[in-house]
View 1 (cartoon, rainbow, N blue to C red):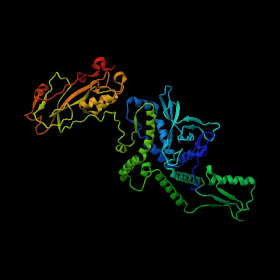
View 2: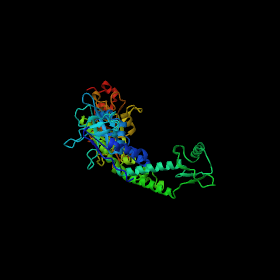
View 3: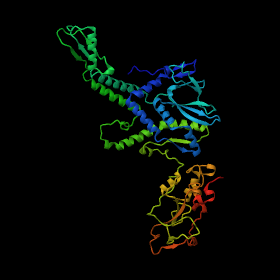
View 4: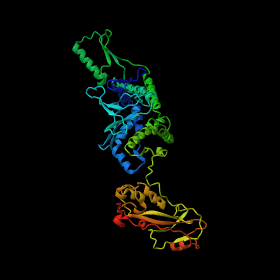
Length: 531
């Protein structure tokens, strides 16, 4: 294996491009090692799955910008880009503009079909060349495309390439030292197949004594019969037919064998696999279906730890190269958005703080602790009717909302149709939480139910208009009284007082706009916002 050498760069000054080996052949060499080595393929495919996870999500930015991202960049293009990046250590994207200079599409371009132009005097690559077959450039003439710069270009190439010391044009796969072992694994597999097809022998010598006089036709027939008996159909001819055997003997067959050969190949197989895992920085072989000698039941914690470390030290840095490239492209077109990949594994996701979309509302709201509070009143926020509040007049202050009092808290619950159709309403009903007024006001700045705002805007007052036009839900006010030594609703000393009386005793029961307690379908214009 030490005979392998990386192909030298071929700089074609007359054509203006640089190839990664003659005919860009290094990429094909890497592809062959991917197709031929089971361990190499398993690790690369698993890394791509871990990098992609559950797909791309946004961590910041508006919903409108997020829709533009999804329109311009399809999931299968992301997967192809991740595979190239893992396979070659670099990847190429084609950025396509609309006639008005708006972003139309970001498409993956197979890395083996791209060659960089020769650097200018400042060390910058100003263009890239595309050819579907670099071995036949006469038929497949290389076509130049400008390097991405954000300038108004109909089509441009963005090359994702980590910095490598001494590498001006190409990056290497980060597992480059393991390529020789991938080839070794491939050749060992080829050897085993050949060995089986050859009748589990390294060859045969068939001795035919000279006393057996045969015509040429009879010799040919004998050779065909021997092939059918002793060799596989796809690997025939692994024997020597000799008509110079000892006089007076019958036909003899001698198998050529190598003692203890299986031990040599077993060692080389394990060595190739181990070196490949080392080159790929695999934290545990079990993550890729390679079992070690310990019991399965004792390895669950080990696998969780190994996956978490792999995500942190190997996968996340690779993801960041792709995300930085995408964010840069989108920013050039005025799409200011933060991106991340949602983790594939729940265990790994627990260590990934960036996977939660901050524009969701599920993190708002709460479940009131029944050990600390009693629900003493619930109504539709209609302040014309008295709301009774049990109190002994004393409590520990523990205000969490501006509407809370010293011995009570006020929360709001989403009530209405039990068969909601809109995603927002489904989530609100399923969450079964109560919310502070501040939580609901905060939703005005979060695109929790995009498209239902004025003129189809993504944000609007959830506090007033709930799920949007014609929504069948509204907010119910709930009043909770603190429990404790001085507050006991079951005590005969406790008394029920109305809201008006509570106010006279100095308790502040806040008021809210009338729209809060009305389903949007009963509001003006059925709650549809036009302004």
